[in-house]
Length: 453
Image: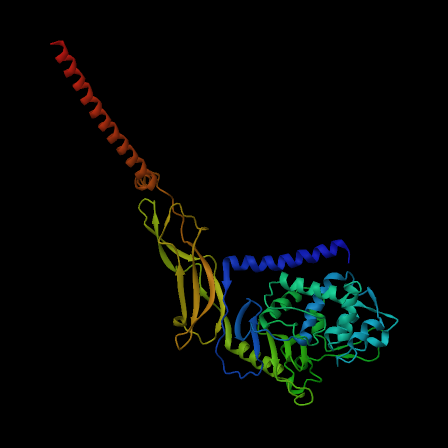
């Protein structure tokens, strides 16, 4: 990959992190899990509104899980960030690379039929993401790693750290089971959110049927949620992509999205029931995802719960002539996803502000914060978001009151008291020395007078 494109992708990655940072500087979105009637079988779940980045449902989202082939989302990231021309880059297919999958029971995409030839990077990406071909994953890893899959895996882990993944470690590019190969639903959300910013990712992961160049056999998606012709009752019309994964240890895994009526959600589901040869026809992750999407799309909506036009609290102001307080308002309108049937009484706002603030105060000065909670029927509060509080008006400082304040502060300061004490002590010493000196002079005069007699 040339230096310009590599620098571009590094800049993209930094901008991705910067956007999150800038958003959090004004509004920090909380982690809320709304109650619902959906019965789920996946052990770890995270459902996030993609329009706001707000979590709306979670279940053991931070528990370490084996990701199986959802690993390939990170494999895609590293491959795309290190291959300049996806359509025209030809990658040699080596038998020695494919041999490492012998005896693993891997899902394959027919890459072996091209041994001794080359395949385009784009065809290998489709082969990896659509039918979940482990063969395509190792070929891409070997190519990008310059003959070292371990080097490629190291790049995967470096990227995970860069994206803020706190409980993720990769051992391979395909997701085959290893006790040291794990992630969490929350980390996988971070990885996928970033992947969605990369070229061709959405296009590839939402494909149900694809033909590689010169191949007559199509690649078929493993995601029945998006496959109208093969998905049967698992097909969900609003679903798009992204990646499935299955091993005995990982169970069923799925990362997918859904969009309808102006709302988009991403669902991460890990460790649904699966045992080879026992319940292979059960797709708990897909039924969980569809049911959660239906609930979210029909029962949740975006509402403004705090407006920059509506004061939240009052703050005491010092050093202002004729003005001893000011109303504080949110720095920006705070719109969050809430249940469609919520009431104003369900929203609780708690402020964190100092006891007082000194003038001058401008309308862009952050004075404190307001944390907005959603209160359930049982009184349980869940944090929706935190927003900065600013003054609703500009307040000038009184020069006279400022001088008085400075003088008062000086008079009450610790060092001023020490100084006054020191002066008093010095004066006392001077007074005592003066008295002693005066007494000695008087005595000397008496002695001289006596001798004169």
